[in-house]
Figure (cartoon, rainbow, N blue to C red):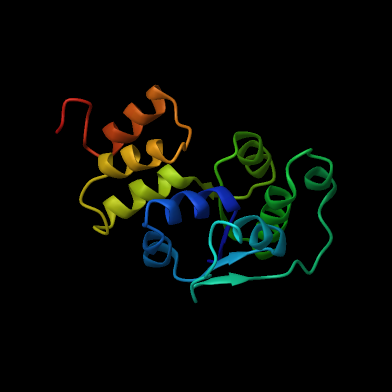
Length: 156
């Protein structure tokens, strides 16, 4: 199954030097042109596994009228077009994806999947690094991720 990404998960994972997790988990990751434009100030050299895929179909009316940013709309449209997973963090975009039957995973879900597959030993240090990069996650979500990773709040 194809995988499409929005800008924020890419920027977050590149900022902490763990973009390798995306290629380890998904192989090739596709991005629409709008996402490519959004990431270019932060990610100057696009790795080989990150490929721009233009949209072939017009955006569906629910996506076009959603009020989401251009990158999110294009990522959802490409995901819908390809029947792909979409990596995105924006809550309204995830709600719309769910309503349209698009499967999603967020940055934190990528970290959990990487740990489950043995690509990461620990999630906690990466959560700390994301926090330092101003990646927003509430305390409750952080604790939930740590519990799911088997690194409860009392673990070192």
